[in-house]
Image 1 (cartoon, rainbow, N blue to C red):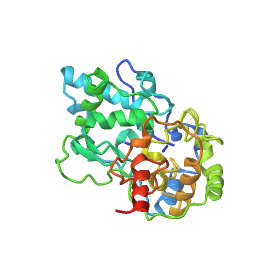
Image 2 (image 1 turned 90 degrees about the vertical axis):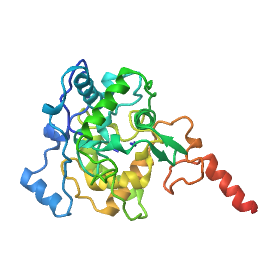
Image 3 (image 1 turned 180 degrees about the horizontal axis):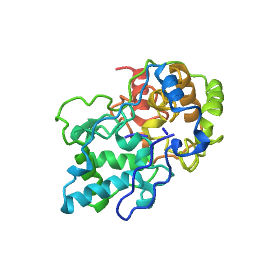
Length: 305
């Protein structure tokens, strides 16, 4: 799980959890630019649109302990930092990456995620479970600490993910899952800085520090260098298809790569053990840090058989 973000709209926070730390930019007059019709026209001119995946209605949440667990899990995704402060080390929450309550296509939606595990992870070099994936997000995207597997919080989050996958056929492809692949382009961080200042700073701040309604995109409050969003291609796809939050799809492919490169060139939290990622030496080309396996592979190539 990865990882950038004018991110998600506020969800109603249930149970004992408090209000989520960021709201939708559309909740603030600071980011209202043009009418709704103008927004739709501009976004539509690029061929991009917000597509929301169907999820079960609340009426299907069962009564009793399971229903209570599902509702608590939903609240944890919406108010992660406030609800689990010991496990979140920055100012992000789950919905900072999984936009619109995890329902928006091409924004790493949560719909169907439960059914995708167990799965082999090249980064880990082993088969991982849904609990492993959740903890990967806590450690990398939220620069924090993993939840104990048997904890109530972990069970509740898994319960909610399972609920979101009701009606999805196991083994089927969920349209809009993850982030769309893009043809890699050579980025220009100088152009990216200009685009960020004119387009992104109104939500994320001039120094990427974030605001009350949008998360930071660099600095100590942002995602770690080991997060999926720290990869250029991942960040570019997220930006291209989802940003700006109120005008998604209005940046070109090149602009998305430029902004992604500029943002990811800025300082952010480290993550312990990142040098052990992709132990089989099959790291993607846009990984932002060296790994032991990649270094050993280069040595072997130089030395030869």
